[in-house]
Image 1 (spheres, rainbow, N blue to C red):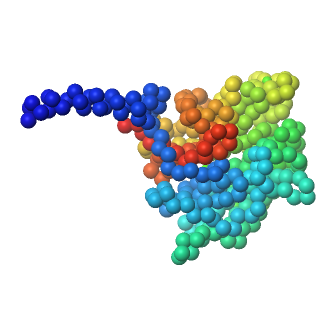
Image 2 (image 1 turned 30 degrees about the horizontal axis):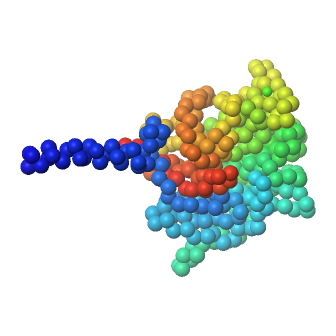
Image 3 (image 1 turned 30 degrees about the vertical axis):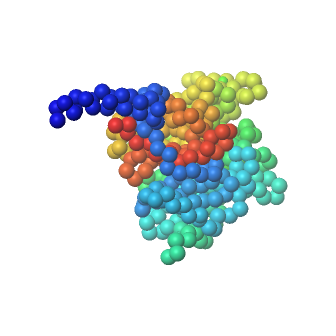
Length: 378
Ligand SMILES: [Ca+2]
Ligand SMILES: [Ca+2]
């Protein structure tokens, strides 16, 4: 016995080194505190959300919603999604189940649409059901809110959805559609965070309605808002794609003006200057900003147990930066933490029921649209 184990020991060591040299744990990924597993492949996915039973709804930009079961990899198309205008940045966008999904089976989703020659982002709601043969659909689909106004162009729709922690309100983001000034226009919902009732009507008590603003507006002066998330204390965090050199994470408070296009730590892509944020300018400055930009595509507030060291952090999917970005929160302040190279444009970050992190790659510019699961390295 003793002789045999001594003789095999060098071989075992050699085998281990070879596996490390050629396997998935490359030198670069070995620095990460997590391992990344490829779970599925989608066609230009945009968003995902877990249902209470552990399955997930995934949207694809061209207009498909898919019920995905991580246990067995089954994909079932969800019927009943209206026609979407999938051009440029537009398409089928966010999907989030109702806070009361276990009882009401309601699913909220956003998409871009063309009407009378102009385009905008719409918020819709339908009732989820699955027949005994497995087919799945949304019934009674209704558009419950439309951005104001619809304009020409295919950019900066935003369209992210988040429910308040008490489940009574829906926050919805409307991008400024690459038109700049609507972000400061009190009558337009473009470039705004909106607070709605669950039926899509403007919530009572919104902070600027009495001043003549559109009654849905909660905060303004935003550009392209591709993530909103509540933290454990009920604070609302938002990320937006800023202009050149001005990506932001903001703490959203009611009635405040976040400055775009009058203040930004970045500048216009055509080279025109935008005054930087400075104390006393009347605009809310970002808590964290990036130059060069990361191109934030999706935002998650991490509350799971699988990565205890990640608690009270925001995670951002980076598009042009092809990265997963961590921002640590401490009360009302935020600071940059890690930024890991993922080798693909990351569009969406979600937390699974067990606290694993799930990522969706964007399907554009060489990225494949894979669904990735992130779990601890050891
Ligand atoms: Ca999501
Ligand atoms: Ca500037």
